[in-house]
Structure formats: structure tokens, C-alpha cells
Image (tube, rainbow, N blue to C red; front, top):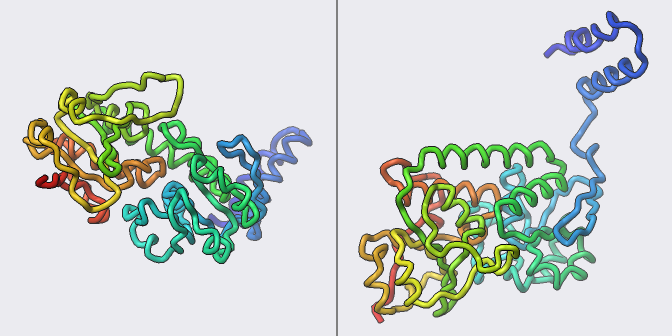
Length: 339
């Protein structure tokens, strides 16, 4: 818009209205903000936010290098139009759902055992981590850069943490918009979902199987899609954690859902057990192995992928398969070892 025209629009009510010093001052400030060519993103800094430790964290200038000691930080930054310069791994693998940025970012080591030497060499302006893993190293982290830690389990945790990180990097409105758009999409998919399907979400660690309760964000998405979550709620619903529990194969057979969603941190087949062949989901080829966006679902990109892929896996006749998910991160048939 032509600046002279903007001036006329902004100043017209001031000129024509009865004199009010407060109103005139407000309008002139607004006009200055809109018309000034010198306002930059750095004018939002320093900014202070409070992380999930309850600790105020001050970011002095717009961070050009952010170390993500979790997938969440890298995910949220990418959604905000910025790439993390360093990313941690889970079982020595970077999060493939994040696409090309995992190849260019510095490998910061395992999320629970960060490589402090590499992190120091990276010289980030901000470090983002998960509270359960980052807090033991907080003193070391804070010698390098300001630290934000997040306690992530539920959808509410996801929304709050996205907003906080967006504020920390000077992108307040984008954070609000990202959460509002996911809420809109979740409601849209809920309205279209036919229902009538049962599901359970497993995490394999060596030969032990864990099953998530229904308050974890990924299972919340499942129930939002009108799926019956076979495991149900935590026995301690007043607590966020534990968000999962050990599950025996006999218990899994009792649940016997229509769909099994399963995460393993490596490429090996799931350990053999005769119960697998008796499960409805295995017999009907509806047992799926998924990538780590399902266990680290709290970032904007991960939760959007999980919503769209689950919708297709649950109701393939209603929802199209999302083809924009990187091939390595797409759900695949669950492979069980021969014994």
C-alpha cells in the first residue's frame, strides 16, 4: 500500500475527531510502527520466557544457531521457518521425519547422553531439550547458551511448548497460528472419521513391550479420530507420568485390537512369540511399524504427520494416504522374526 495513502487512513480519524491526547498518541505510535522501514525482528529482543522447570530464560538477541537436544526443538523451529544447527539422536538415529535438515545439522549424540564437546564447538545461541533428559545436564548446558526444557506428554504440553519456543525466537504470532491450525485440522478430521476401529500403541525396547496410556499425545490423536483405544486410561490419571507401562503378550492378546501401531528404535524384526499369529491386526495385515514422530509427536510437523497417516491407516476408504511424508518415516507392515 502507498505510504501516503496509509498516512491519510491513519491520520484522518485524528484530524476529524475532537482532540484527545491519549487517542492521538496511540494513533501516532501505530502509524510509526506500520510505516517505519527500520523495524526488524531483533526489536523483539531481549525476550524472557518461562520453561517447564518454572525458570525464566532470557534470550538476548534473535538466535541464529539453535541446538535441539530432542526432535521437538528441531521440529518446531522448522515449522517456524528456521532449521536447528544441531540435533540429537534416538538410539543413534536422527529423526528422519524432519527431512533434509537432519543431514546438515551437527550430530549432538543421544538425547539422554549429549556430546558436550560437539555442543560447545557448535556455539549455539539457544539450547532446547526435553526436561527429563536435559535437566541433569542443565548446569553444563547453561555454560554454553540459554537453555529451554520442556516436559512433553499431552497435547496441552505440545501447544504450550510450541508457543513458548516461538516466543523465545521472536515468532509469537506464528506459534499461535500453528496451534490454532492444528486444532482446526483435528476437529475437521474428527468430523470425517467414521469410527468403529480399535487400536493400541506399542513401544518395543529390546524384548520388552511398553504400551502407552490414552493421555499421550499420539493416543489422544487416535481417540480424536474416533478410534477405541484398547489400553485405556492410566491407573493414576492425576499424573502425567508414567505415560506407558510394560505389556505382556498375553495382555496384548486380551486387548486384541483391530490395528496395532508399533515403534522400534532399530530395523530388526520384532521378537518372535506365538501370540503374534493369533492377533487380529496381524492376521488382517493391520499391524504397522512407525517412525519416531509417533513417540516424539509434540512438534508441529510430527503431530500433523501422525494425524494424517493415522487417519489413512484407520479409514483408508475415507482418508487418502499422505505422500509428502519422507519414505523412511512412513508406516510399514510390522515384521515379526521367525523364531
